[in-house]
Amino acid sequence: MATITIQATQNFLKPSVISNVFKKYVSIPQGLPIIDIGAGTGNITQWLVTETKNDILAYELDLALAKSLSEAYRQYPRVQIQATNFLAAVNLPSRYCVVSNIPFMSTTAIVKQLTEDKRFEFGYFVMQEEAANRFGGQQLTAPSGILSIQMQIRHKFSLLHHFSRADFSPAPSVETVLVKIERIQNKVSLDQEQFFMNFVSYLFNQSHPVVRRAPILGRYMARRIDLGRIQLMQKKPSDLTIEDFLYLFSLCTYEVLEKIAGYDEKLKSEGSSIQKIYRTRNASNWKNMV
Image (cartoon, rainbow, N blue to C red):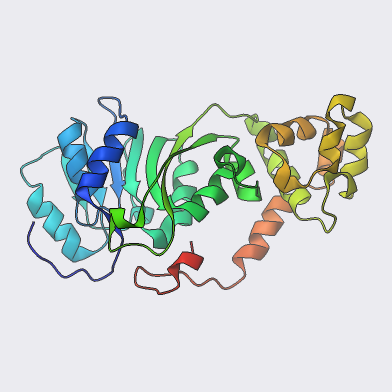
């Protein structure tokens, strides 16, 4: 590949690392289209070309990089280079998987978009460990959060590998991991999903730290809980697993849940009204902006 001037820096995995780590953990069924988000210099794209026979869509918003990739893979009809931001992608396959060193500047937005897309089946993601823990929660041995619990009703998170900073060029200033995210059968029925979202948001956003002290819901659940699980009432929401949340949710009637209707939407609306600063690939403090 010809030498090019990269307009926005990114931490690229070295080809030897991709070969060793991906060969061990990444498995793609034949025929399923693969998307590489933030293809960069094409290190992951090249591994996919070599190791699979699948169609590959590589997204790269840096025009210089995208042009170089297009030239490098011109002789491969099954490889399509998209010189655009994946977040603005249209006409995606009816089903697909992802193998990507996600651009750190867009981690949250990309994961959110993928997990809300029913066409997305699973993906292997190189990402900042802090961000992975925020998405995976206790599935990745981290405390639970609103985002992790809500995501886990449709997705399973698995931590596969910890990278060394020397595995990248240039080396990142944070810890980086390989995570698998896969769509699973919904743990909450569609007609109950919004009720569950409100339930989770409400428990996490009370001034009292333990579940038992939550207004409206605390005493109600305590009167109905199985004595064998009474200890859940004395835990913080961040100490609960997705299974704990699902059990506590099952204790609540429609009438009780109606009292907190709209809570999740309200919380997200308030959050979106706060001015956000999005880091760029060359931001010195990007690790705090995932």
